Image (cartoon, rainbow, N blue to C red; front, side, top):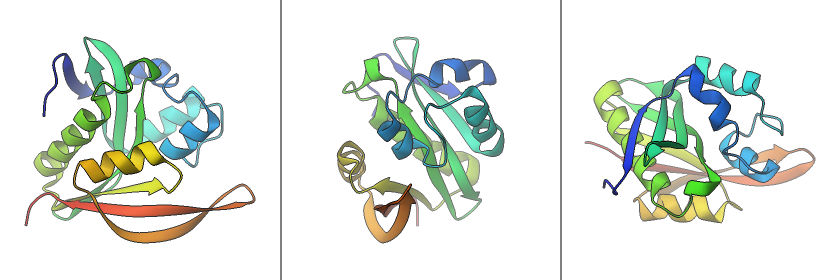
Length: 162
């Protein structure tokens, strides 16, 4: 699982200014944080950081490279992954896979979760391919809105334990 130079730790409030730069477009922000407004502000990110659990920062060669958390958690049952963002400079270097796998371990260790749930918009090709590669299976499709436009959100899950 571990690629050279990758590590992770709890994300601190002091990390948020750097995480703000991870989403480099309105589309990227929508995929990672659909309720946020572009451009992402420290206030929006700080509110999510305070409300959510398991805020985690991935490091590549000591630099902040990725961020994720759980927007829902039901100990003994499941966690739902949210706010997955990778720094533009770190993409294509295994950070997303590493971070999702770290979140799976955290869901098991800290929440005794049986499964990790993710949701991915159907036009987020990179996200869909990542989750498929990591063994996530589709379990639902729901309609969401992006302004006036209808969008499809694919729900996926991965069994972490029986």
